[in-house]
View 1 (tube, rainbow, N blue to C red):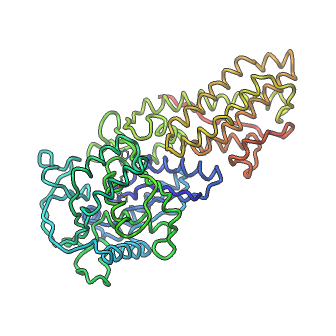
View 2 (view 1 turned 90 degrees about the horizontal axis):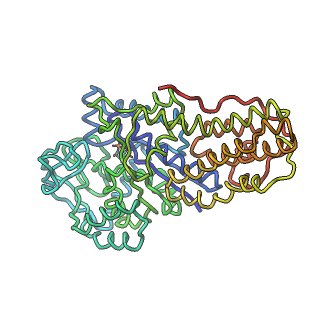
View 3 (view 1 turned 45 degrees about the vertical axis):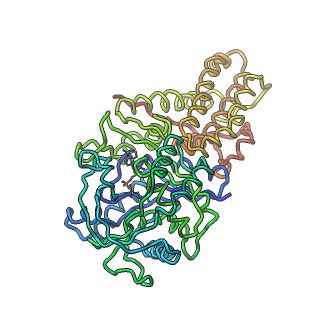
Amino acid sequence: MKKYITTPIYYVNDKPHLGSAYTTIACDVWARFQRFSGHDTFFLTGTDEHGQKIQQAAEKAKKNPKNFVDDVSLTFKNMMNHLTITNDDFIRTTEERHKKAAQHLWTKLVQNGYIYPGEYAGWYAVRDEAFYKEAELVEGKAPTGAEVTWVVEQSYFFKLSAFQDKLIALYESNPNFIQPQSRRNEVFSFVKSGLHDLSISRSSFEWGIPLPENTNHGKEHVMYVWIDALTNYLTGIGYPDNFDEERFSQAIHVVGKDILRFHAVYWPAFLMAADLPLPKQIYAHGWWTVEGEKMSKSLGNTVDPITLTDAYGIDSVRNFVLREMPFGQDGNFSHASFLNRTNAELANAYGNLVQRVLSFVQKNAGAKVPEVGNLQKIDIDLMNSVEKIVPTLTHYIDDLKFHTYADDLWKIIFDCNAYVDQEKPWNLQKTDTDRMNTVLYTLCEIIRKIALMTQCFLPVGSAKILDYLAIDQNKRGIDALNTRLLSGTNLPVPSGIYPRFSA
Ligand code: ME8
C-alpha cells in the first residue's frame, strides 16, 4: 500500500528552530521506517511563503517579498539537508505548480457552488493568519496571545457551515481521523458548537495567489493563505494533472497542536466540497518549551537545530526529541536533560554495548564474525527478542508512538549489556573459547538486528554499526531480520559510535 506523510509547510518569516525540526524529524523517522519495511513511501515538507505575515516580514527586512522568501526558504532546505532528512520533495507555495493547483481547487469549489462574495468585518491575527470571533478573544487578544486587528474588506466566503454534519459524521465514523484522542474531542466540540462560513480571500494586500481568472472573481483579491497553504498536500503529489488519489487517501498530516483546527476542520471541508478524497489522519503533536519558558524570538531562547546537531550530532537530537515525551504531549527542552539523555542512552547504553563487543572481537576473536558453537537457550532467546517484537514495533510507528518504539528497543539493549556482564567473554577467553565465540556471535547478531531497527531513529550511528559488522547496503531492510550473520566474515576496526559529553 502506498504511504504518504507530510509536515506542515513552515512560514518563512523566520529561520527554522527546534519546533520545525521536531515535526520534520518525527515524519522522517516514520518515512525511513516505512521504506525500511519495503513500502512505497512519499514524504513531503516545504515552506509556506504567502500572506500578510510574510509580506510584513519582507517589509521589515527591506526586501521585496520574492527575494525575501527565496532566502528564508533556503534556510529550511538547508536544515533538511543538514539533519539528513529524507523528504522526497520540498514544496514552496510560490512555485508555479502550486499556484496552478491552488487555482484549480478554487475553481472546483466555485463550480460546486461553495464560494460566494461578501464582506468580512471581524478580528484578524496576522501572527496566526487567522480570523477570530469576538467571543474567542481573551483580554483583547487572540486565544494564542497574538495581537488582533479589526478588519473590514471585500472577501469571498467558503460555505463551511454546510459541512458541520458531514464533519461530525466523519469524526464519528472514523475515530482515528484525528489523533491523539484528547485533541479529537476538542475538535469535535468546536464543530458541534456551530460552524460559520469562512472568509477565504483577502483584498487589502497583494502577496498571495491571485484568484483564477476563469471564475470572474475580483483581480484585487488574493487567496487567504490557509487555503493556499493546505493545498500544498495535493500539489506535492501531482494535483491536478497527475494527482495520485490513492496515495492521498493514505496521507498522514503531522501538525503541531496550534494548527489542528485548520487541518481537521477546514481542510476536510475543502476536500469534500471539491469531491476529493480525504487524508487518512491528522496527528497533532505537542509543544516544546525551552528551559521551562515558551520558545520565542523576543525572549531570545529559540534553539537552533543546526547549532545543536553540529555540537552533539544528529542522532542525539533525534533521540532526545522523540524520547523526552510521548508524541502528542508537551515537553521541555533543557540543556541538562539533553546531555543526560544523550550520555545515558547513546553513549553509556547503546554505544558502549557496541564498542565493548566489537573491540573485543577485533582484539580477541580474530577480527571476524566469530564461529558459532552450541547455542544455549539464553542465546537464542536474546537473538529472537528483536524479531519477536517487530510486528509490535511496526504498529508503534504506524501509530506514531515513537517513544514506545524506542523504549522496547532500549530494553533489549539493556538486556544485552546484562548478558555481557553475565557471560563474561573476557573470562571465557581463558577457560572456554568455543563458548566465548558463541557468546560473541550472539552479541554481534543481536547488535545487527538492533541496528537494523534503529536506522530510522538513529541513522548515523546505526549506519556505522552496520558498517562495522560488514553488512551490505542491500541487506539493511526488514527482510534482513530473517537472516543470520555469516561466521568468518572479516570485520573492520571499529571506533566509537557515540561520544560522552561533559556538562
Ligand atoms: O503554522 N513546539 O507554520 P509555522 C513544537 N505555515 N512544534 C513547533 C513549535 C514548538 N514550540 N513551534 C513550531 C504554520 N512548531 C503554517 C502551516 S500547513 C498547511 C501551514 C512546529 O512555521 C509545529 O509543527 O508557524 C507547528 O505546527 C509548525 O511548526 C508551525 O510552523
